[in-house]
Length: 341
Image (tube, rainbow, N blue to C red; front, side, top):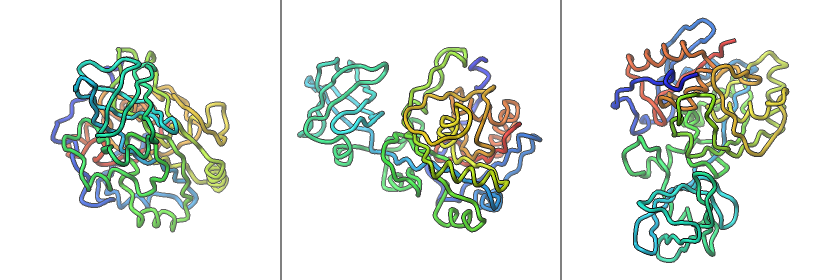
């Protein structure tokens, strides 16, 4: 397939720069991929659409303050975006500078932190922060890594609203954005319907914002991300299926975690690295319904949605959303998709 098939034109004013006034105040476009039907709803309608035996699976990753302002010994500025916590003093990061430091070089953060550039791993640099854990350093010096299409500096509102209410496990450098719509009351309403709420973890990497390089979809290789599907989530899904319920993944990251854990067939508890790339032709084994935001043109996330709903359905849904002035991307509105067979 050609990457150009997943392109579309979006008026810039539809890129949401701030979250809705409160969680749950967004719009919700429902797409039944089996019939192609579209329905304009509000996010508050979601609990009524969840069945009493369904399993609703969320991603409990927590966004870290992954962006650091550093400098080289020459005084030149270096922007550090932590991509992966490696434990202790080490991390993998993207570096942006007029002349990035070479392996063996140093970066200085604040008045007292020295960072060793240990080497390159593809597009990433392996760094060691002398004398301090990376997590502690980020809490003192880091900034929230808002996506590049959000044009304001992160503030107090972003510190709260760019985290989900179920965020627990630090490690993501981007939010699992479908989860940003939920407040505690919505989760309670879903549970009151009799649905099971289950969790997975997938630490979202910076590559989530990157358009595909090249022209052929099949040639793309995903960056790997850490994930975990615990046994209790596997059990909750098995119980839902036994009772006639369906699996609703909250976000593409939850879907990728679940489908990664079922690559050999049956869903099993799993943890490790996943580079699963979902594009049209993929065989879904676990997820039957997907809650997701609207995604960037030519992105792997848009390809995942096209695999789930059918490319023609997605084109019509996105054209409808643009015509009806839905808000797009991380702080934007949501879609609920019933999977195509």
